[in-house]
Image 1 (cartoon, one colour):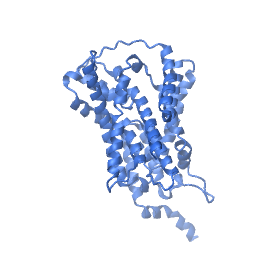
Image 2 (spheres, helix red, strand yellow):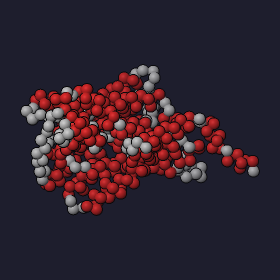
Image 3 (tube, rainbow, N blue to C red):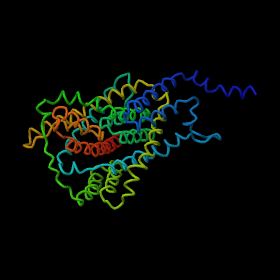
Length: 398
């Protein structure tokens, strides 16, 4: 009987044995506050924060490995089924494709360059992580550095995809030690996506003059034919799959979703892809990501490095897009407002909205939203392609 009573106190005993889980409760509460009270990326931050809380409850019932007569924990099942197999991030890409209009980019193809230029932040952060890994304070190797670098694209699903792939690659190699940073990189990516309206404006003001911010871009909406819209996703899949085979899963699902949208013949599939399915997967993915962050994994010096490098990567990506836009102005007669270069990151549509708001503060009659959407959606393609490049290079080097 006393043994039975002792079992009732196991939770309190576990807190005494692992007091760091209380710190994780505070972190979960902070993310929940940002999502609910501040309404910043609530669709992901709410389930992620609850996943963190569930992973750090006493005895870890929801993340247990199973065996010895006990079933596998619910969130562990989500990890095994949805993240290890890449199903969750790929289904998210399907939904993103179904909700994305590539017409602004197709009507002004040069904005594709701005989406590509913003990917500079990925490689800057990768190099930064490798340099930090040479110190005695951080244990970052090539696999961890690749996972951190992709944060610069400001694309949560791609970050999760790459971080998971890199961890699986490291685990498959004999005598190879890799840190589990999937949760930390995912939270960093989504946090910076939520902070786009705070991070980008100072960089835009620093790198542009008032005269440049006042540049008006006439929106001569070249009608993009339905044939072009249908051919584009199919052609993109073929071209990128040939050039960067490792990017095929991400690009393939993104473009499949877009084909469902532009074909116009399967409205039910479009509705399910961008609404019901997307919402269900977001819940499962958020819980799965949060549950990869038990205290013993998350509360490490490397986590601080990940957040600082992620911020630096995002700032570099923003700056690179702006500077590329300024360079294009030197080489072209048709001037573009360099602020739209900041929208080259994958944070759709937050980055485009920031450009629109800043443009209207300078000139209330200057409408830049549709111009900014071009590099914004191009950034999604760019980040997914860079992810494939990283996978190919890293696998070849190891």
